[in-house]
Image (tube, rainbow, N blue to C red; front, side):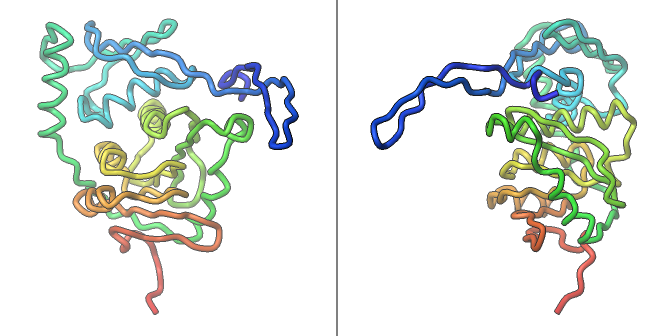
Length: 251
């Protein structure tokens, strides 16, 4: 499926010895996605051209606009996604929709109420899922995956943005009916507070990235009861918050 994520473009490669040649390279595609909430335009997202339904659902959940139980119906047509909720409210304009989003984001709880603990082997095994064919072709995409406590890959999503990939993974989890409290999030991107909080709103108890977190990401993870892991490699990893979620023998 990498061909749906990519497009061929001409370029000129110039070498240090003065040589030059015309070539074609594969670039990651980006498309606008218009999101409508309860019949009203909500926002436009820019993302890879697949999993648009997952993107829209995940975005609303991780931004604190709606919860899993409030989503009633999701429909897509072209580059538009329309979501209906069970909320008893009317959004009169884009401005009031934005105001409502901010109010609900501020009030929604971001503490992950889960007692899930993961074996180190399950986390190290996640390194096998950190790259995609699209990334190898373009070097221009991120990846997010959800893996259960037994190490089984449940969802793997590719997108041009690390936040989009996370949103799509959460949206896919909703559509599949997965219990996120029993899965960890694997990411290729850096983890500032914004990314950690998005995962927390969805109830993800652990985030592991091959990159590094920011200090704000660590602080957000500590407040949200999330285990945050950076520099995930086959041979080692760094645990920055809620280390009790990883079964380790202290020495």
